[in-house]
Length: 134
Image (cartoon, rainbow, N blue to C red; front, top):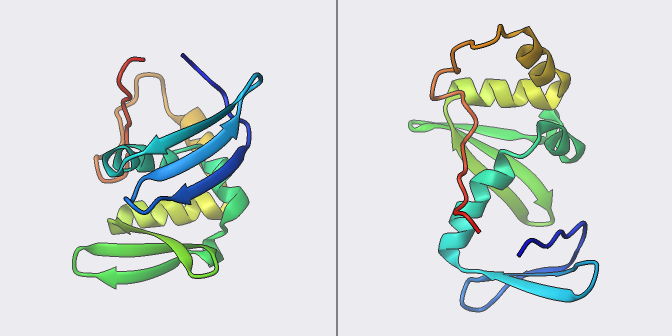
């Protein structure tokens, strides 16, 4: 069954760590509860969603970066005392900041690539998320 939610009625973390999402479809109210493993599977898809959507919420100036031995810790402030922190390689961080500064960069880069061009190196490619068949 496929349901489309254009807007959420609620989103909260339950005491067991599950994420509860309430939404209305065209016919009914629904609640989806995601356990921790399901949240881990969902997060890469949310982070890899269309860069133009990311650009609506963040600019390059909003992103805070901290250099660590493992890479660069990018922090995206979302609200009061809420932030998304992602550990990135330096190459991925530079590409992300370029996209936030000018979301048209990704579109121009894709249009300029010749058909059948090789994929970017693994450290710069966006995450791929595969959902099980429904």
